[in-house]
Image 1: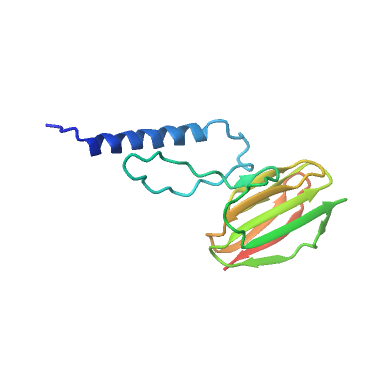
Image 2: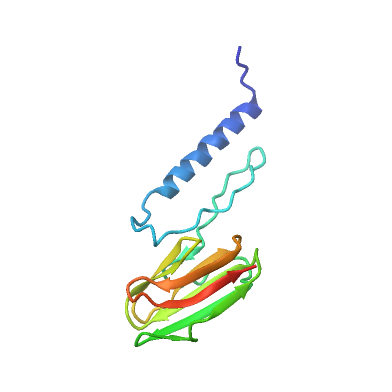
Amino acid sequence: MFVSTPAARTAATLAAATLGALLLAGCGQDDDPSVGTPSPAPTSVAPSGATPTASTPTATGTPSASASTDAVDKQITVTIAKKRVDPPTGRVTVSKGQLVRITVTSDVADELHVHGYDLGARLPAGTPGSVEFRADKTGLFEVETHESELVLFQLVVR
């Protein structure tokens, strides 16, 4: 026999609302897998009677005044002009767990891609594009542009 209690109904309502929010969040995403957003961080269960909230994606195709509420640990800025990368291609090291923001401005339209994290951003000509993520995977990851096939730098996460 199933007994319906207020706590059970609240838990079921919260689960249904969370599932609905997750399904809606998946709609409208770009079909290009290289231009995606990372999965949102897991949220904790809201207390009884509270309204669940969804976290916002942290990868953006254009700059945003409120790209993140957390302080960025490592800001990496790259400019591309006439197929030349500035600063010149090299390695950038960050510590595991740091919040990293990569901002790229290109003189031609392109796409930014962070290998290993499968993050990307559109780069309209002359307009900065940014990607922001938590460096939670260790290793060596190339950061490149797709159209011009330029390696911008190698990200080392230790």
